[in-house]
Amino acid sequence: MTDAINWPEKSRELPNHHATTNQKWYDALNETSGRVKPPPDDIRQYWQDWLDRDKHPFWPFWENVRSWRQIRNLPNVLLVHFTKLKQNMPAEIRCVAAIRTRILFV
Image (tube, rainbow, N blue to C red; front, side, top):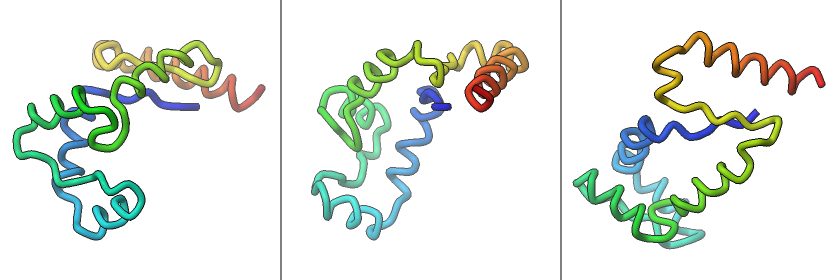
């Protein structure tokens, strides 16, 4: 089963991970691509850069969104809307469990 990205959570989590990493991490990434740099201090600028610049800072934002939408009807993919999860977590968990059970026992 594949999890969809929780964008409200990622909007806080990803910049924090990016900003608090160490030089060893940057070196490992840059040995391959040479494009991962420390993030700007302004979180709004961080997200604006990601939306405006292809593959910044890690992967293409809009391509990622499109790719999940393209496979959303596959039997092993469940896109859970954050608002629905917050409104009725027990029902959403039952939905996830039902799909997971179906996948595991097919």
